[in-house]
Amino acid sequence: MSDEQLQTYYRELGDQLVRETRARREAGLLTRPAETDRLELLRARWNEVRSELRHRELTP
Image (tube, rainbow, N blue to C red; front, side, top):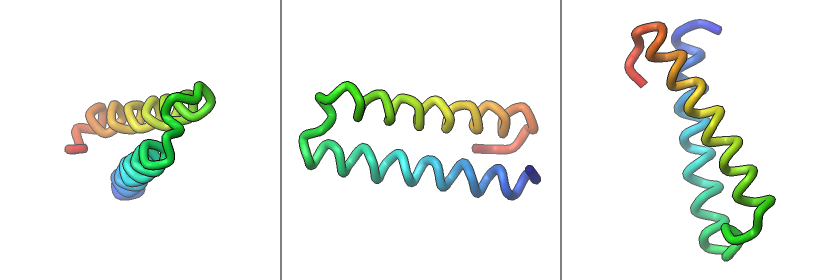
């Protein structure tokens, strides 16, 4: 993945994380284990991409 593609992917993951967290909070679903597990996986992937950006010396 190119630097530009990785930065775009990072932003998209962040946007998705915000949207899903907000939607689940509004629906009262954050207390369900399956919902929190999905958000944790998404957040973990976002952190992995952020680490790769730092490794490439790009600003996340």
